[in-house]
Image 1: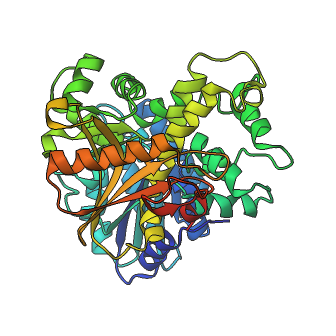
Image 2: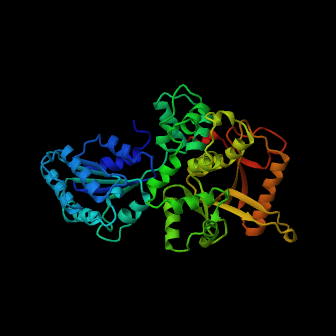
Image 3: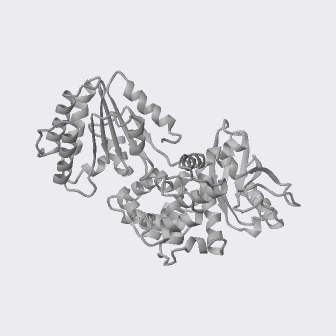
Length: 472
């Protein structure tokens, strides 16, 4: 059962019903549901479907490819000697197909493109020299290796330049979509528990698919990550190895960012990772951003070259905090409830969930139709100028001359704004106005799961966003 992928389904069904041949690329991080989307939308009505063989040599890939050809009806074919011959066999299969629309689905395409092979040349020749000239071909290519898809297919500078009919960048589920997903599986969780689960696993459907009904959330987390033989105990290594052919430099980058809550500049990352300052480093940052592991943002009033890179992938953050040292307690998560270790992580993880639901936050504030951008901001203390020194993790700068200064506070109950909170918010506002010279109105916004409790220091808060609002 597909959950809330209407936009992506429409793209696929429109292409299927088109009166000319179409070529679509589907990409996104591992486990996000790309293959499931294609299969469910098209009801597996493929003239030919093949999945690349992970880690195989060219001969292995061609052997598996031949097996798929035979499975789809080309019974007497022998193994081709190269990819040019392999795509000739696809043509032969298509010519003999009675279907009105010939759907060709090549999954995990990057694994077929082994070093030194002629795969890309064969793919270009198939589409440019044959399929695109027909009216009945629907070619879908898919890969979890986002970096490969971007460089070799989407931003191809060679024969496939500007040849795609459309591309689908499949995103992780939102909180609302995760709620619908577990409801479809008859798993009972309240929204607080869904939020906490999202703080651990993000919106990756594959991870949520391991949840077992009848168990509490702590029991499920122990079963998924901490018991002997836990299905996701080694997911970190598998994840980065499958996304990047040489994962070492990427892991160095996310490891460095995992130690710095507010993020790091490119120069700071170079110093922390000891990687070479080359074009490859910038490409790696871009690839991690496109995979959804980090976000790149500017501090308000700063130039692009001073951009900050921040780790935002929930699962990676959870791994660094709790899984990297391989706890031996099989009930680790159940035993850690409400400990200082978990409570400190909750604050960080909740902020990341809020950042992933920026559009829902805007909707809750009633500013969906107002042009706005998200920024972070910081300044150092300067007593000679009356500057206290501030760090603002999220501020929404709006075209209607308002800046929403968002204070994200995780709490298990209605949040009570204390005198210290009130003073901190006022100092941040004062610093922001003094340092930047901003002439916008500054609205303090409290983002907290259960809303704000009435108290003596609530008057400066202009709006409150609750966890319920993140489910919009």
